[in-house]
Image 1 (cartoon, one colour):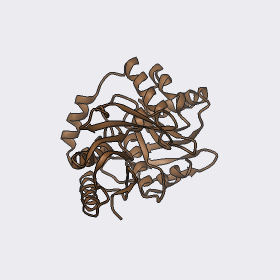
Image 2 (image 1 turned 90 degrees about the vertical axis):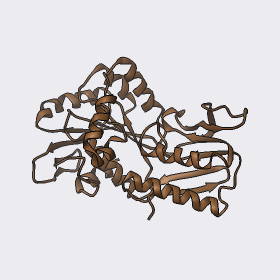
Image 3 (image 1 turned 30 degrees about the horizontal axis):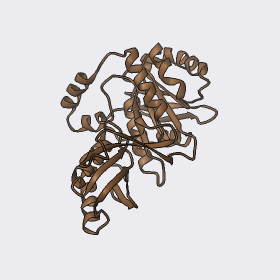
Image 4 (image 1 turned 180 degrees about the vertical axis):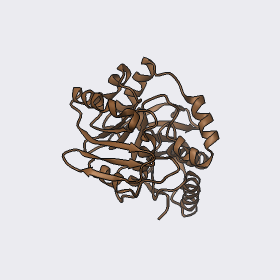
Length: 306
């Protein structure tokens, strides 16, 4: 099974991820698949081509799609790329990323009438204190979803300015020092302006499944961001157990169902499921970015709840 898939439908190039792997392999598979399509005549060129698939403003998805756009830019007069974070809810919006003709101005948004959803959008919010393992759980959940045939692409929304954007998980496995340096450079204060921007990302998210990482504290900024959350997951280690009740009150204020209340014990020996219903509870051990946790039963049960 390839790590990246491409197929052409009329003037739309459909792209999606396959089996989970490292980013460099995804890019290699994307290039091989693209070259094969060109050789076989699937991409014969023309006036306008849409590229439809996961391509947010950061992360591996955007790298793959913009690499494709660069490689075929000489075949088409204009290329438009879908980006879920600027979408109208329910409809696809594309950005003109490459243009050689006045009719299509670079940066212009094309709002289509194509419905983007036939199911309710799921916004799963991960909350918990710093160093509870949220980023590891987020990455493990994403990789587990990739391995499910027919599952929707999970869009990752980093709704806090901590520098741990979509690129960070893969980078830290390869070069911890560089990843940490970049994180520190990108880290910023949680301002009302950022909160409003993040709220717009969540409100406009039109992919069927979105995993949203919010800041570790209950703040007014989080109250701006969270009205669109449909499910909440609380992850707390020893340092954050006193905050669990506060997070519970926070989500009850929004009538948002809490589907999981999980402990994180970094030095523990067991991944233990305590209850599955009506609330999923249990304990994760050793939530570290160096670990691939997608196959752990705890992650599989969590995914089954959404």
